[in-house]
Amino acid sequence: MGEDPVTKGPPKFRKYKIAIRRSDICDIQEKFRPAIHEYSKVISTAQKMLKASRSAILNIPIYATTQNTARLGPICSELSLPPSTFEADKTAFSMMIPALQSALNDTPGTSRQVAIVGIESHICVTQTTLDLLKMGHQVFVLADGVSSCNEGEVGIALRRLAHAGATITTSESWLYECMRDASIPEFKQIAALVKETKESTRDAVQTLCKI
Image (tube, rainbow, N blue to C red; front, side, top):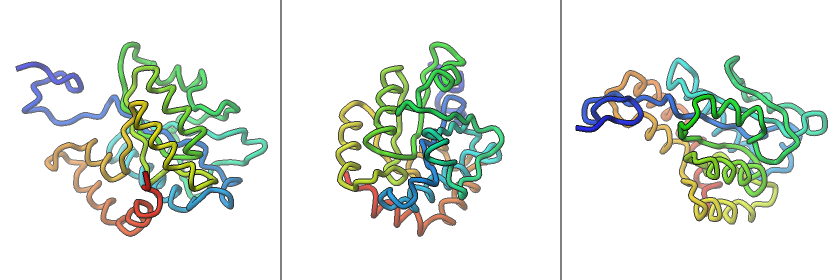
């Protein structure tokens, strides 16, 4: 029986490990609050991902960017970033600025699975996703956690990214994919989080996931 590439053990008997995953929060800033379509739902999905990514649950590294903070303000106050978050300000539209590229490639030759939430779907999220794909990483765009000022741009961007090779999915689906198995210790915590956010998740999926 071959080894599992994630855990270096037999696939049938392993406990799933997520050391090669990361969560990206793209430019969810105060200044965009009145402009972005259904921004509150983007924020609620980002909050859920932050709770799930904390070390006590899934231990997924979090990377967060702001777009030109001097002009567009800080990250939204609802998003309580843990101290371990890798934060960077940028003027480029893609999150893949040198500092984040360096952090991503701390283990050369290792492909990562990156989940993205943020704005705008057709600009920063699109360019970040395309750059990550070009670098050989697997990208999950969480459709209940991305949006744009113009609602019509969102579906077009998601279809383009799917065609480019990204996986368009939802936050809940991705969390369960991270766990893979209900027997792991983290399952109860994630299941409780899913239950806690059931209403906001339903609203976000119904409103934003129009591909």
